[in-house]
Amino acid sequence: MTPLDAAAVFAAGIGAGAINAVVGSGSLITFPTLLAVGVPPIVANVSNNIGLVPGGITGVLGYRAELSGQRSRLLRLAIASVLGSLAGGILLLTLPEGAFPVIVTVLIAVACVLVLLQPKLSRWLTGRRVHPHGGPWLWLGVLLAGVYGGYFGAAQGIVLIGLLGVFLDEHLQRINAAKNLLSLLVNTTAAVLFILVADVDWIVVLLVAVGSAVGGFFGARVGRRLPPALLRGFIVCVGVAAIVKLMS
Image 1 (cartoon, rainbow, N blue to C red):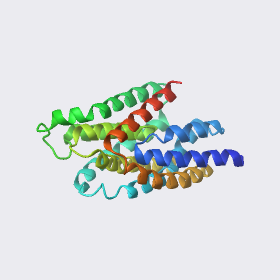
Image 2 (tube, rainbow, N blue to C red; image 1 turned 90 degrees about the vertical axis):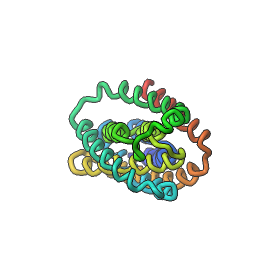
Image 3 (cartoon, rainbow, N blue to C red; image 1 turned 45 degrees about the vertical axis):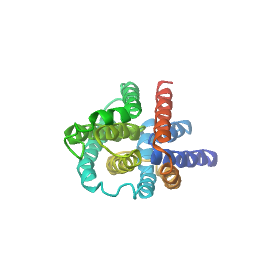
């Protein structure tokens, strides 16, 4: 890797960390960058996943105030995220990549629709919610989002925000904080698996890790100040960009 390539990967890490803290899908910046500098796809995916963990940590710390009061709920959902991530990581290491772009495109599109409709759906569900933690359907949805996140991870934040926003009667910023923590658990679980059994490019990991940690810190500071409507619009724009990127 040339110095210019290294600078590009580092800059992509900063951008990914910032976007992950605000909404998710930072891998849509780092993954194509790694491919562009010549890193093989599977190695790029694995190394990128490990490298984004520090950015997830700084993003969670930046939203720690919004996590207050969500401990019991997140402990339940954390189990789903960890189990799903393990399954997704194993799928990545054992299955061909053929159907991946179609599946991910559909998931992101559905998530964007959920984010857009979340206020109306939340009003419709008011009084109908039977569980303060979202119930079994949310748990199952978080499990499947974990499978997706362990398999690739780009835009898993959009999927999680869509799910949490529909099933939980919470302010969008608190939902975003919960999303950051669950995404971190997914990435960390997959990272441990990949370190144990997969080929890792540790130079890539270092560059992405430092960059994402910086980006996650500043992304959280900006994201916490965005009003719900603006944050929702930003989420949908990132989701549409993700779909275009995957279909191109």
